[in-house]
Image (cartoon, rainbow over all chains, first blue to last red; front, side, top):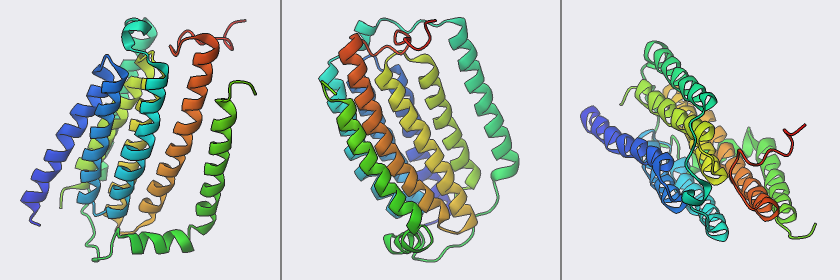
Amino acid sequence: MSDKAELVLFWVFAVPALLSAAGVLAARNPVHAAMSLVSTFFFLAGIYVLLTAHLIAFLQVIVYAGAIMVLFLFVIMLLSLSDEELGVDRMTAMKWAGALGGAGLFATLVWVYWYQGGGPARVVGPDYGTVKAVGRLLFTQYLLPFEATSVLLLVAIVGAVVVSKRRI
Amino acid sequence: MVPTSHYLILGAALFTIGVWGVLMKRNAIIVFMSIELMLNAANLTFLAFARQAGNLHGHAIAFFVIAVAAAEAAVGLAIVLAIFRTRGTVAVDEVDALRDP
């Protein structure tokens, strides 16, 4: 793919991703916020494909947009809350300070990335980012963290069941 | 190839949106969604740097981040449900039992 086409594809995925991420904060209804987040995840999956991270792009769609967001929607519908019932977000002085701090963080990151981060990318082989290559890395060098992750997921399952039981 | 700085700045923007959500929203579920946004921004940064370096270690880390995010969402939403059952609200500024002297 030519550089020009890749840059066009980057903007095609990046701008809607940012807009729908902003939609998560702007939505009055939590269901709309969840839907905005799902579309953010899909556009980010496109960005991941541009970065030749095919396995992570698929996991993004399957685990994030599939499993995690279904969990969110279940909880939203169990609670059947809307932002109207919660009242308007009050902008206190602390929140303005937090927003300013967030903007400062963004400015700092952009400054650092613009002057330090933009090195040229290496040329990578055809199996870069495929299931085979990443799987080989996960099951050799990262085998212990991989198994620890399975224990973590088991703990999370047990913890979620215990915490959400009506009577412990 | 799109310059790596483009991906990094996109990740920074997504992370900032997540920070704003965590700091400014009252609904605990929206706060959790903002945390997911921040985790995704971190993933994007890992993948961008992995592409720049030409190795796959960033992909392994992104895999673990996704697994941890799933665990975090499950436990966090269970806690939100439990709080809603006992206090009848999910507004983060009204759940202050540990702050009261």
